[in-house]
Length: 147
Image (tube, rainbow, N blue to C red; front, top):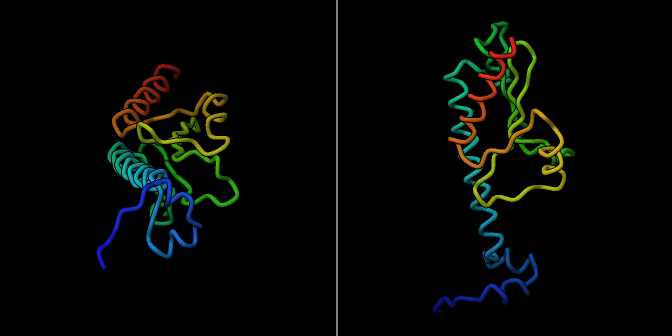
């Protein structure tokens, strides 16, 4: 049997169960999957860069009594019950923190995330690895100047 292409309108009218059974996704679902993968890549890159700067992940492997050179960072993987939690929290050794939400250029927000970004002074939005690095560097400069 020759495969046939279905329009997005037809796929949208199918039940989620039927779409899953036939391995079909709407354009919106495909874009969401792409954005999720791209955001995870940004997260990996930023976390790797933070390690080179002396910030350690707050994980059992690093919690062995040693003190990181500059501070800690952590993120919650699939934060059940708190879907508005931002992607990355960085804490300097003196307790100052930076909350980062990492998005692709067209990535959307979960309910409540925009409000956190708009009302929390230490919360910032980065739409690329480079933008996250610039925000972190600026945060560190501001921290040094305030000492």
